[in-house]
Image 1 (tube, rainbow, N blue to C red):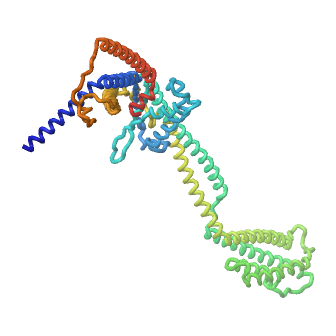
Image 2: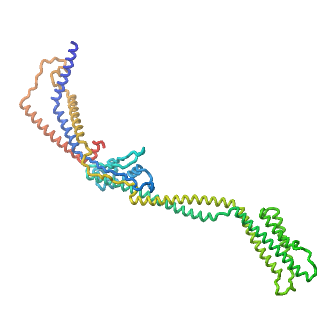
Image 3: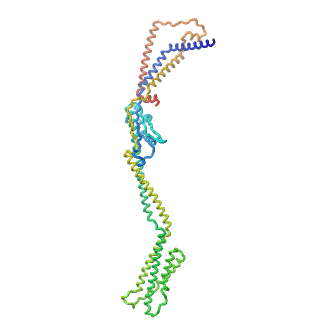
Length: 515
């Protein structure tokens, strides 16, 4: 029984709520319909007055080197992705975008780029790049990219997209050619500098020093010549002494007692032989060498101060003078001796500095070999750079190529009028319901006897219905017609105003489309 009472109670509440909603709708239906119609008309006017946005798309292919890198090494460094970002920064620079805006008369509603950045920033937002990558053995490689641009005119959108793609292709070729030419010029300058350095080292390095064995052998040969020279001097002085004795014997009738070995000249010759032998073993600072040199100097003074031998007057004029011949031979041998001693001194000087000269020569030889090796490496790299530069100018290296040029798009990108229309209908319904609810809450009048009975504690006996006359009906109809006409005129004006606001309003289209 209790369950039946609860069910009846809920039924009464549901019926009461439905009746209340029905009463409210009957009282406020014209307000709700007016708000709904006005909102829907204005919203749909905006939606269908917005300019259509189109998107043009061009596909650019990254065409790899036509000549394998194993044969010709490219002079352009860096990955495609890095170069693509660099080119993107250049293409999206203020100068280039301002040129495109002025060339195609883009964004007429926005201030010109010369005085404002709005158009440039909007164009940057309208441009998009979609890289196309593939997996090459665990390494992601870019094989191309799609370039898109959006705008309100299909023909202009296609033209701008193709112009942007052309800029990418042009800038890539320019960057590669400039980098290849710069590499070749740099290597050429380095090669010229290294060539001069190599020539200078060639001039400075000179001839390789003689080995110590050759120096020792040369000194031994000179010492042998010096001993032979001393022997010849000894024999010449012996002949000179004999000639003098033979010339003096007839005049004095005396037999000479001193032998040739006891004469100062013979002693001088023996000392010179001894000095030559000592120099082959010791330096000039050795005590025996110093002693023998002193004895030689003293004997040379004695021989030089001795009186000249008397001329052999009794000898026939037709015969040669043996003393003069011996003196001439001695002068010649002494000149030769001095020459040999100078050569020996030169050999000794070279022998003393031979280790240092050998080290210096080896250091210079190493420097020269290193410089020459680096020069050969630079030469090879310069030749490769020249070939790479020729390839860049001949379009034989990696290039950007427009695979699919942009065509005037037929499909509208934005706005999505169907979706916006549904949203406009929902907005109109919501605003109408809100207006009805607000009007009902703000209305403090009593609409039924039950409303008055609930509000007042005074008992009510009966309710008198409104008395409507024909005049009241006529006035109500006139008033309804006037309000309807006014509403239609106001709605038409509002729709016209929305058309003026929304027509060609690209910013509003982007705003409603989320871009």
